[in-house]
Length: 91
Image (tube, rainbow, N blue to C red):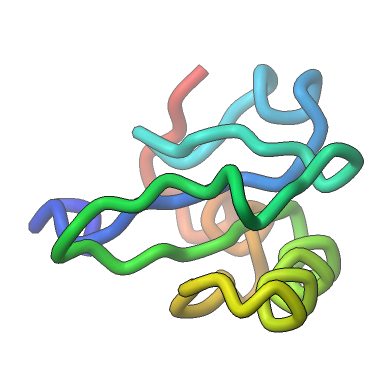
């Protein structure tokens, strides 16, 4: 999905975690200040939340549901699974 340009990844980890490495092109919106109303709206792209293991992105997804924000999913296993799969990392 990333290669095809079909997705926007929103990383809800804290700024220092994000700076240590993230999915290429991801946008950082830490859970500590997360507001569904501030999510990017990009026509024709899926919005996927991401954190280290899936817990915080799941919490952010719940906040989106309450706010009725259009979010497609969160990344199961999070950045930890991404890194373990040896996929590209941006710093």
